[in-house]
Image 1 (cartoon, helix red, strand yellow):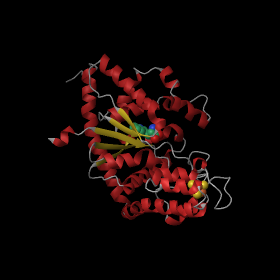
Image 2 (image 1 turned 90 degrees about the vertical axis):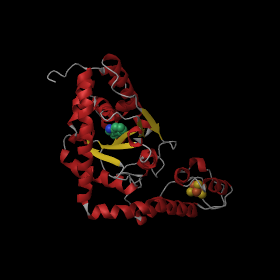
Image 3 (image 1 turned 30 degrees about the vertical axis):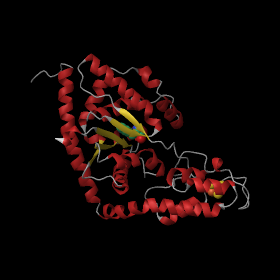
Image 4 (image 1 turned 180 degrees about the vertical axis):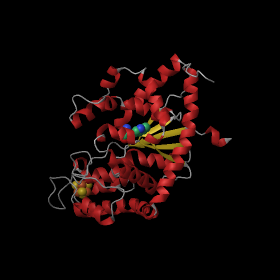
Length: 333
Ligand code: TRP
Ligand code: SF4
């Protein structure tokens, strides 16, 4: 009985590479924390990844498994959380088509995340699939009637679009869907260790969940600090220091003390970085331990994905029956 009453979470990622600490503070941490309280579904959104990778779809199969392995390493428990692959759930594609009738092109064109991504990729004539991926994301979220969507801030326009679709669908046809809510982490977007930009592989400014202790030490060592500080006794300005940003996000126990000492010139940047590297390695160590099992037995990862996909297809079929009923498309009952 109690099981049935649990609210649902749906969230996920595009399989475009290894997950990093930005993903962790932005959303993964919330997912791990909430997975027992909510019935949780994690989508590996390979169709959405195709919007920018349609020329090299063969890359996706590695990245799908990479993301799944990162989920399992971070502490997503496959006994309680359902992990699945978007393209293997045709009900999502079907729902996307129905939703595409009730979303306007202008709504999509004004979506700030679509706009900034299109600029980033240099698209002036973007594909129909790229422009429309928020519609497909609405189908991801609603095919299982999710109530809560833990995401990073950049995803808020998509959740708003989903809510709009849900309201319109429910008003026009029948109240099939709950209006999902976003859950944004209280830690703002984490900058790269160079302090300038978003984390990216080519800039070598991101710490991945799969990084070794040595990699973490190396990356933290070259992180950007307060440029005005030359000697250890110079008073520092933590508000301009990237290392301090990371202490705020990962070291709440010591962050006040570090701030005071930095301002007073009582801690050197070398020691401060060393402490950060320790804190990060302490966080990552249990993930490294969990990862070993899955890397040595990749079949376990595939089995988890197959079982998850099978389970959500059943849920999707039921929802689509309700959708067809609501839209009077159930001709041959
Ligand atoms: N758009 C998300 C991202 O780029 C990935 C995603 C796809 C997603 N479908 C979703 C997130 C559904 C939350 C809910 O990270
Ligand atoms: Fe940054 Fe720490 Fe150096 Fe202060 S002591 S500038 S917080 S690295």
